[in-house]
Length: 431
Ligand SMILES: [Zn+2]
Image (cartoon, rainbow, N blue to C red):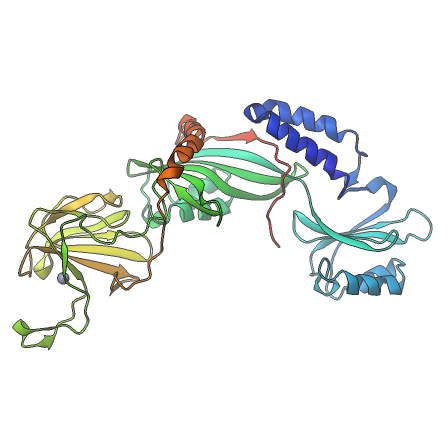
């Protein structure tokens, strides 16, 4: 563990000093620093000084037996299992996990050090050379920045797969854009660009991908950038924002009309209407009364699934926002969008009218959740905070180079490039 400090410290110093030119300078400097260590240093130990046994925990194995077999005396094993429970709980070693035993090179071949690999990056050391010491540590992880650009041919996952990108990035990308793009309705020809990290241990062992450092998605010809940004440094809340600093995890607007409306009728399943002889006529929408011609806006990003005239609904528009939510806007004077069109939150989709079954000019706003109409005023909707104005300058400065990097990528070229960055920081893979 201690032998890494030199390397880590060097890496940190170098990172700080040549941020602008990390590609060229870092590898050389690092090599120089690591040369002084013994050639076969692993986990902070000189493996050449020991007899090394690599194995994996098998069904029925116990730490105690493994150690007894390797000539560790019983009291020491008891000490380990009792004293270091927080660091290394011997009862919790898992079948299939790799471990290393470093044994003395003499005739006794007594276990000196036990290294348990919690996951690809994290490991636990039980050092039994003198009085027992147990600690956890991490392998130095190298982040390799990847950039990839592509055009959707069939599905996002197939396209990313054909470019050699880990499937986990499909999930991450669809999470970033979950509120903006319906990934089940992607169009052939939609383009994307992606900058992310791949993690490697000892430069060779792949240890996962992500997070997304910057993304670009062109859906139906409309570009949407995505950049992660911490909006609340105290709570460390990170969200993805677009090129205009809009939160991509956009929640719904409160109303489909910007201003100058009043709610004339709320969602009410037990509504009785005099006209129908006071029979129950459920009202599954919220009515926003406003003058004819008032613009009606989309309450969230989505794809228009219907734009037509039918019966009592009159002229209406229905928008699918994601796998869960759709919204519908009735009695329009006229629609401004067609089915299949992609709209963003706040876009005008039509104008208030009196088409269909209505006594006065209003828009009946209907909110669908998993195919059922619910009351949006009572629904617990996902919240998304807008970026504070005070942070916007910082945000735009932060995204400038990332955006330039994305813009320099040729979407659709199918090329994948690597930019190597050295960050001997710790990985986060969990077992
Ligand atoms: Zn209504």
